[in-house]
Amino acid sequence: MVFEKTNDYLSKKFKILSSGHLIINSHVNGVSAKLIIDTGASNSCIDSNKIEAFKIEIENYDEQASSATEKIKDMYISTRNSIDIVGFTIKNFKLFVFDMNHINETLEKNESTKVDGILGNDIISKYDGIISFREKKIYLKLDL
Image (cartoon, rainbow, N blue to C red):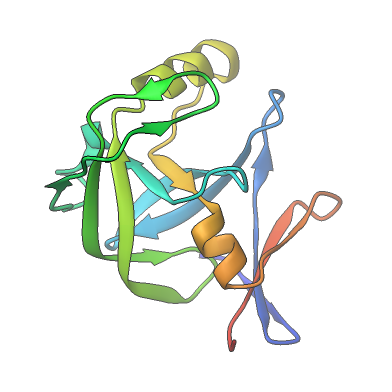
């Protein structure tokens, strides 16, 4: 992974799709993952179609969740995960798990790409995230 350290922040480049979605390469449980950076998503998520690839153990989650386009059916939760975004690993991390086919169908149709999950505001806010559109980088603070 390519990352830089700047004033206690680590940074990582992201790609901006023509749709405006920000895409970052990361690792979930040691496996390469392509995530949408979404400050409007309360929690980080992973596609339920990828639970085996990312070695994710799921439990039922009874609360209703929704996205900008629809209510999410069959929501699960997974604990004890690791995620590496900008060169440091967050351990014992909670991920919400749901079928992201509707997201990937749209991205594949319009952008010729698919994603594995969403990097949500739970991480971005906890690590004092800064998104620089000019530099196309996300910065996360190491020591809080």
